[in-house]
Image 1: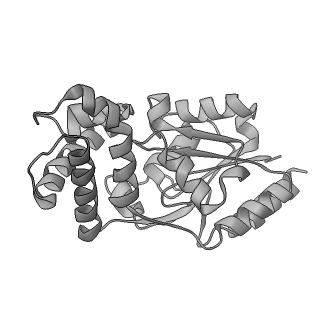
Image 2: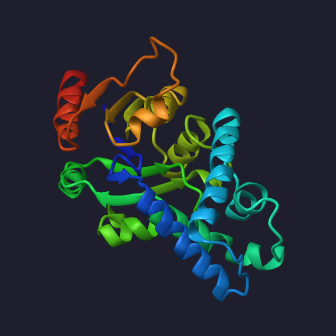
Image 3: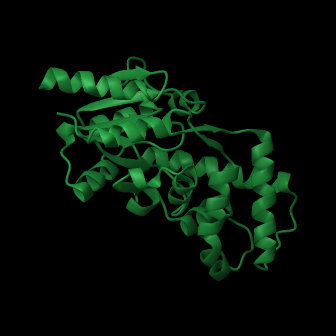
Amino acid sequence: MINTVLFDMGGTLEDIGHSRESELECGTRILRYLRKQGMDLNMSPDVFIQAADQGHRQYKSWADRTLRELMPYEIWSEWKLKGLDLDQRKLRAISEKISYIWEITYYQRKLRPDAKKLLETLRASGYRLGVISNTSSLTQVYKVLNEYGIKDYFEVITLSCMCGYKKPSPVLFEVTLAEINALPSETVYVGDTVSRDVMGARNAGLALSIRIDSEMTESSDYNLDAGTPDADYVVNNLFDIFDILEKVNLKLA
Protein backbone atom coordinates (compact mmCIF):
# COMPACT_ATOMS: atom_id res chain seq x y z
CA MET A 1 0.00 0.00 0.00
CA ILE A 2 1.17 3.52 -0.80
CA ASN A 3 1.20 5.56 2.41
CA THR A 4 3.88 8.22 1.76
CA VAL A 5 3.92 10.94 -0.91
CA LEU A 6 7.05 13.01 -1.49
CA PHE A 7 7.04 16.14 -3.64
CA ASP A 8 9.51 18.16 -5.65
CA MET A 9 9.26 21.91 -5.03
CA GLY A 10 9.96 24.16 -8.04
CA GLY A 11 7.83 23.18 -11.03
CA THR A 12 5.73 20.74 -9.03
CA LEU A 13 4.13 22.25 -5.94
CA GLU A 14 4.74 25.65 -7.49
CA ASP A 15 4.76 26.97 -11.02
CA ILE A 16 8.22 28.26 -11.85
CA GLY A 17 9.45 30.47 -14.65
CA HIS A 18 12.44 32.48 -15.73
CA SER A 19 12.78 35.63 -17.83
CA ARG A 20 15.20 38.40 -18.73
CA GLU A 21 13.29 40.67 -16.37
CA SER A 22 13.68 38.24 -13.46
CA GLU A 23 17.41 37.97 -14.20
CA LEU A 24 17.88 41.74 -14.03
CA GLU A 25 15.79 41.97 -10.86
CA CYS A 26 17.98 39.29 -9.33
CA GLY A 27 21.16 41.15 -10.28
CA THR A 28 19.80 44.45 -8.95
CA ARG A 29 18.81 42.99 -5.59
CA ILE A 30 22.06 41.09 -5.03
CA LEU A 31 24.21 44.10 -5.97
CA ARG A 32 22.18 46.31 -3.62
CA TYR A 33 22.61 43.82 -0.81
CA LEU A 34 26.35 43.47 -1.45
CA ARG A 35 26.77 47.26 -1.30
CA LYS A 36 25.01 47.35 2.07
CA GLN A 37 27.53 44.77 3.29
CA GLY A 38 30.47 46.89 2.16
CA MET A 39 31.14 44.95 -1.04
CA ASP A 40 30.47 47.31 -3.95
CA LEU A 41 31.32 45.50 -7.18
CA ASN A 42 30.87 48.65 -9.27
CA MET A 43 28.99 46.65 -11.89
CA SER A 44 25.66 47.16 -13.61
CA PRO A 45 22.94 44.55 -12.95
CA ASP A 46 23.26 43.44 -16.57
CA VAL A 47 27.03 42.86 -16.40
CA PHE A 48 26.77 41.25 -12.98
CA ILE A 49 24.04 38.80 -13.91
CA GLN A 50 25.86 37.79 -17.09
CA ALA A 51 28.94 36.90 -15.06
CA ALA A 52 26.99 35.20 -12.26
CA ASP A 53 24.78 33.33 -14.73
CA GLN A 54 27.81 32.03 -16.61
CA GLY A 55 29.20 30.69 -13.34
CA HIS A 56 25.77 29.33 -12.45
CA ARG A 57 25.56 27.38 -15.71
CA GLN A 58 29.07 26.02 -15.28
CA TYR A 59 28.21 24.95 -11.75
CA LYS A 60 24.98 23.27 -12.89
CA SER A 61 26.88 21.37 -15.58
CA TRP A 62 29.40 20.13 -13.00
CA ALA A 63 26.67 19.29 -10.47
CA ASP A 64 24.57 17.42 -13.03
CA ARG A 65 27.62 15.39 -14.01
CA THR A 66 28.76 14.56 -10.47
CA LEU A 67 25.32 14.65 -8.73
CA ARG A 68 26.96 16.73 -6.00
CA GLU A 69 25.49 19.87 -4.43
CA LEU A 70 27.70 22.39 -2.67
CA MET A 71 26.91 24.72 0.22
CA PRO A 72 26.03 28.36 -0.61
CA TYR A 73 29.48 29.83 0.13
CA GLU A 74 31.20 27.24 -2.05
CA ILE A 75 28.81 27.93 -4.93
CA TRP A 76 29.36 31.69 -4.82
CA SER A 77 33.09 31.73 -4.13
CA GLU A 78 34.07 28.91 -6.51
CA TRP A 79 31.54 29.40 -9.31
CA LYS A 80 29.16 32.36 -9.47
CA LEU A 81 31.59 35.04 -8.21
CA LYS A 82 34.83 33.27 -9.04
CA GLY A 83 37.71 35.61 -9.83
CA LEU A 84 36.17 38.72 -8.27
CA ASP A 85 38.15 40.58 -5.61
CA LEU A 86 35.88 40.06 -2.60
CA ASP A 87 36.44 39.80 1.12
CA GLN A 88 35.93 36.04 1.51
CA ARG A 89 35.13 36.35 5.21
CA LYS A 90 32.28 38.73 4.42
CA LEU A 91 31.15 36.60 1.49
CA ARG A 92 30.99 33.50 3.67
CA ALA A 93 28.80 35.37 6.17
CA ILE A 94 26.26 36.50 3.56
CA SER A 95 26.37 33.64 1.06
CA GLU A 96 23.09 32.11 2.26
CA LYS A 97 21.32 35.47 1.98
CA ILE A 98 22.39 35.99 -1.62
CA SER A 99 21.50 32.36 -2.42
CA TYR A 100 18.03 33.06 -1.04
CA ILE A 101 17.72 36.24 -3.12
CA TRP A 102 18.81 34.29 -6.21
CA GLU A 103 16.26 31.52 -5.69
CA ILE A 104 13.29 33.84 -5.19
CA THR A 105 14.10 36.43 -7.90
CA TYR A 106 16.08 34.66 -10.66
CA TYR A 107 13.09 32.30 -10.80
CA GLN A 108 9.47 33.46 -10.74
CA ARG A 109 7.48 31.25 -8.37
CA LYS A 110 3.79 30.79 -7.62
CA LEU A 111 1.94 28.03 -5.75
CA ARG A 112 -0.06 25.83 -8.12
CA PRO A 113 -3.79 26.49 -7.69
CA ASP A 114 -4.66 22.90 -6.67
CA ALA A 115 -1.64 22.26 -4.44
CA LYS A 116 -3.18 23.14 -1.09
CA LYS A 117 -6.38 21.22 -1.78
CA LEU A 118 -4.36 18.13 -2.71
CA LEU A 119 -2.22 18.32 0.42
CA GLU A 120 -5.26 18.77 2.65
CA THR A 121 -6.98 15.78 1.03
CA LEU A 122 -3.92 13.55 1.19
CA ARG A 123 -3.25 14.28 4.85
CA ALA A 124 -6.92 13.85 5.77
CA SER A 125 -6.77 10.46 4.05
CA GLY A 126 -3.81 9.35 6.15
CA TYR A 127 -0.93 9.83 3.72
CA ARG A 128 2.42 11.00 5.06
CA LEU A 129 3.94 13.92 3.15
CA GLY A 130 7.40 15.28 2.48
CA VAL A 131 9.46 17.49 0.16
CA ILE A 132 12.75 16.74 -1.61
CA SER A 133 14.23 19.73 -3.43
CA ASN A 134 17.36 20.55 -5.39
CA THR A 135 18.26 24.02 -4.15
CA SER A 136 21.31 26.19 -3.50
CA SER A 137 19.68 27.92 -0.51
CA LEU A 138 19.45 26.54 3.01
CA THR A 139 16.34 28.60 3.84
CA GLN A 140 14.39 29.34 0.66
CA VAL A 141 12.23 26.21 0.57
CA TYR A 142 11.26 26.52 4.23
CA LYS A 143 10.41 30.21 3.91
CA VAL A 144 8.45 29.86 0.68
CA LEU A 145 6.44 26.87 1.93
CA ASN A 146 5.61 28.91 5.02
CA GLU A 147 4.55 31.90 2.87
CA TYR A 148 2.30 29.60 0.84
CA GLY A 149 0.73 28.36 4.10
CA ILE A 150 1.56 24.69 3.42
CA LYS A 151 4.77 24.03 5.36
CA ASP A 152 2.99 22.25 8.23
CA TYR A 153 1.61 19.57 5.89
CA PHE A 154 5.07 18.04 5.57
CA GLU A 155 6.75 15.72 8.06
CA VAL A 156 10.12 16.04 6.35
CA ILE A 157 11.88 18.52 4.07
CA THR A 158 15.14 17.40 2.46
CA LEU A 159 17.40 19.84 0.59
CA SER A 160 20.23 18.96 -1.78
CA CYS A 161 22.59 21.62 -0.39
CA MET A 162 22.22 20.10 3.08
CA CYS A 163 22.81 16.53 1.88
CA GLY A 164 25.68 17.32 -0.46
CA TYR A 165 23.96 15.44 -3.29
CA LYS A 166 21.27 16.35 -5.81
CA LYS A 167 18.57 14.43 -7.62
CA PRO A 168 18.67 11.98 -9.35
CA SER A 169 21.09 10.68 -6.71
CA PRO A 170 19.21 8.24 -4.45
CA VAL A 171 20.89 9.77 -1.38
CA LEU A 172 18.24 12.46 -0.91
CA PHE A 173 15.47 9.87 -1.05
CA GLU A 174 17.28 7.51 1.32
CA VAL A 175 17.84 10.32 3.84
CA THR A 176 14.18 11.32 3.63
CA LEU A 177 12.82 7.80 4.06
CA ALA A 178 15.16 7.16 7.00
CA GLU A 179 14.06 10.36 8.72
CA ILE A 180 10.36 9.46 8.65
CA ASN A 181 10.83 5.69 8.82
CA ALA A 182 9.06 5.03 5.51
CA LEU A 183 9.59 2.15 3.09
CA PRO A 184 10.52 2.73 -0.58
CA SER A 185 7.90 0.14 -1.61
CA GLU A 186 5.20 2.28 0.05
CA THR A 187 6.34 5.65 -1.28
CA VAL A 188 5.59 7.70 -4.39
CA TYR A 189 7.51 10.73 -5.67
CA VAL A 190 5.92 13.61 -7.59
CA GLY A 191 8.04 15.89 -9.78
CA ASP A 192 8.18 17.74 -13.09
CA THR A 193 11.31 16.26 -14.73
CA VAL A 194 12.36 12.84 -15.94
CA SER A 195 16.09 13.53 -15.57
CA ARG A 196 15.92 14.46 -11.89
CA ASP A 197 12.62 13.36 -10.41
CA VAL A 198 11.55 10.23 -12.27
CA MET A 199 15.08 8.84 -12.48
CA GLY A 200 15.74 9.78 -8.85
CA ALA A 201 12.64 7.92 -7.68
CA ARG A 202 13.65 4.86 -9.69
CA ASN A 203 17.24 5.01 -8.46
CA ALA A 204 15.90 4.96 -4.91
CA GLY A 205 13.55 2.04 -5.61
CA LEU A 206 10.33 3.90 -4.90
CA ALA A 207 7.03 2.24 -5.74
CA LEU A 208 5.83 4.88 -8.21
CA SER A 209 6.78 8.14 -9.88
CA ILE A 210 4.26 10.77 -11.00
CA ARG A 211 5.13 13.71 -13.24
CA ILE A 212 3.48 17.02 -14.05
CA ASP A 213 4.86 19.35 -16.73
CA SER A 214 6.27 22.76 -15.86
CA GLU A 215 7.97 25.55 -17.76
CA MET A 216 11.31 24.05 -16.73
CA THR A 217 10.61 20.47 -17.88
CA GLU A 218 11.90 20.78 -21.43
CA SER A 219 15.06 22.71 -20.48
CA SER A 220 15.90 20.13 -17.80
CA ASP A 221 15.17 17.07 -19.94
CA TYR A 222 16.42 18.24 -23.35
CA ASN A 223 19.44 15.92 -23.44
CA LEU A 224 17.79 12.69 -22.28
CA ASP A 225 18.63 9.59 -24.25
CA ALA A 226 15.92 8.49 -26.65
CA GLY A 227 13.76 5.85 -25.06
CA THR A 228 14.32 7.02 -21.47
CA PRO A 229 11.15 5.89 -19.66
CA ASP A 230 8.78 8.53 -18.36
CA ALA A 231 6.98 8.43 -15.02
CA ASP A 232 4.49 5.71 -14.17
CA TYR A 233 1.79 8.38 -14.41
CA VAL A 234 1.74 11.82 -16.04
CA VAL A 235 -0.92 14.28 -14.82
CA ASN A 236 -2.25 17.63 -16.00
CA ASN A 237 -3.12 18.94 -12.56
CA LEU A 238 -2.00 18.02 -9.08
CA PHE A 239 -5.33 16.84 -7.75
CA ASP A 240 -5.34 13.96 -10.25
CA ILE A 241 -2.69 12.43 -7.99
CA PHE A 242 -5.20 11.65 -5.25
CA ASP A 243 -7.39 9.60 -7.60
CA ILE A 244 -4.32 7.73 -8.90
CA LEU A 245 -3.19 6.80 -5.40
CA GLU A 246 -6.64 5.66 -4.37
CA LYS A 247 -6.93 3.43 -7.45
CA VAL A 248 -3.44 1.98 -6.93
CA ASN A 249 -4.14 1.21 -3.30
CA LEU A 250 -7.50 -0.36 -4.19
CA LYS A 251 -5.70 -2.77 -6.53
CA LEU A 252 -3.14 -3.57 -3.83
CA ALA A 253 -5.73 -4.13 -1.11
